[in-house]
Length: 285
Image (cartoon, rainbow, N blue to C red):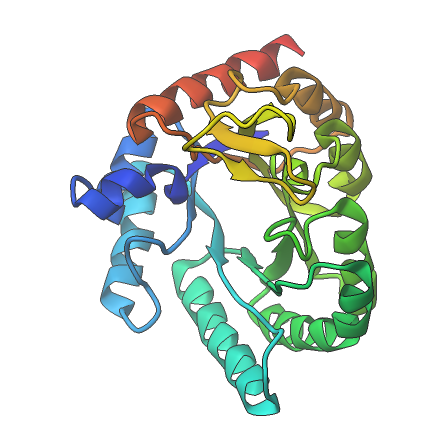
């Protein structure tokens, strides 16, 4: 297991201007992170080759890997032209991933107000075709692309698997987020077990959860079925992180594990506490 941190965890410091992405890499290395996952929020790499090269050189200079490049995308569009434009945009992001030197790239696939399984089934072939085009292009750079369980529409473990099988490419897998399954009210331990064989990358994330009849007020968001979630420091929330890690370890998974923090605490404090917890729990399970 190679434990590191997603740059998204430091989003607050990036947006406030207290840190830039090079400072984020320094900070992660200082915490003992073995890798950094690059999520271009609060900065942009595509179209900025000098910064892309600086990120690559900074990570190499600090002796940590760049594990994954994770971007947004949406192939549920209103027109064929928009669909093609979105595919072309993601292909340019693949070029950025290649310049970074990564061998893993997550791109989102779809978001939709209609999250029903019937709508998903109608969109599946079109979504798979887009992912197949991108995976084939990425294969020329020896990059594995992936979909994350993310965004309600493709968040449940079975929907992720449906897309993986429809794309049917060896270099298209899943970035498995251990917390995001709760957003569609799926048990995280069971869902992780379901999708772990398909994982190219693992995110560790924790949430506080409250039932729909106990509205906790501001700072929370609703799940697909009306329950309430709030980001937590890993190990402090309601997800059984210890059991999740036990299953991951027992499976023999030996790839990158990336901490994602999105709680209300100051981002550096929340990230460090969660990172230390995951290291400790991994040794204990």
